[in-house]
Image (cartoon, rainbow over all chains, first blue to last red; front, side, top):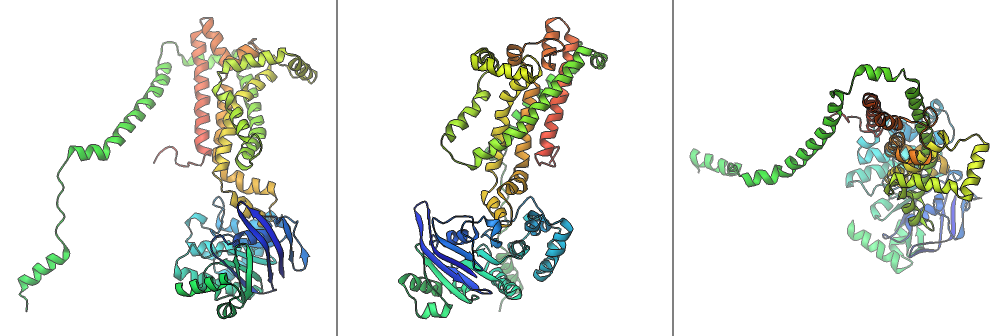
Length: 237
Length: 297
């Protein structure tokens, strides 16, 4: 579904060095790594906000390496939700549809099933600035999914939430992913979040070190970096 | 076992000692309220000065409401008002078209000579307005300037009338709008524009749908400030365009000409019109800058 092959990118002093990733259709993939390991850069390369100096990105078999973000049709949710403060909840949710020229009424009709699935009908007339952290995550999720993306990219989606809200939002993400049979890349640095994944990848120093089920990474870490991350994660748990 | 008295004392202890009543201390009062009192006093003093100037004009023996009404029946003064409105609004249009993109470019892109351009833009703000009039005059007397003047004449733009006024106004007011737009766009998180790209926007759509609405207050305030500067311009116009009644006379010129010829009543009435325009511009700034409750707490 999503193939990132030998991605190279230089950002200041940091480099992605032939980072490769394969995410299957309908798979919930968690990408873990320490702060500054290159998780967000790789995610931004996949969604088209950054263009790699070398390597290839394909989505559903189509090479999208040189395409703009809008032509990749991927849902992207940044760490701080990135809700537009000058727009209300409804207009945030229908933003991607309106940007693609869908009329207002049609956009509302298309977004409604998603709104009902996420249970955010009571929030629709609210100002985004008045929402709680968990509510913001749900609205941002609805916005990212409104244009029926090929896949969903989540950049530390629950890191700003407290512990109970994290578990709730993670469960919600998994439920939505299964309901829509969507491919998801979820970037985080917590083993608790990784537990919901079908497969986990560990990135360190700009390279993807190992991918596989979480249990496999715990029991047979391929590199010291993976072992260290698993050990630190378990201590935290 | 404990006696009822002991229990009562234990409860008192659990509730904690009663808070000691703090004694009045002048020093503490000064520390707590001193800064507020001083700054608010200065604020009241300055506001009072501005209001006093306006009120003194209204109640002066030179101001007559009838003169103000008469002003609108004097063809030359009405022509000056019209020219002021047309030129300042044209300048505003140019400011909107040119200065908002300039402010955006300065806030978003780093390029060779960025700092130099950023500094040059401020030049018309710090240069004396009269000096700008002189530099324009000299420029249009030079060979390239004469060539430009001929081209302007060829398309019907008279350098000694409205076109010259607009050029002068634009040069002096654009920096305010660029500066305000730059600051406003710098306040918009660039990541939100990037996010808009992932949601299906082109760069231009991201600008229209995200950056511009979020920077709206500062951008509009800058435009209104630029318009206010343009409409009140006088010195450089006298030097560069000159002042021919009915041709290149704008409202500030009217005030000067009337004062020069002893028509203080007419000058004061024209001043009142300009004060009203300035007041309207300020109300507009506050209204559009997003402070919905600008008239109170």
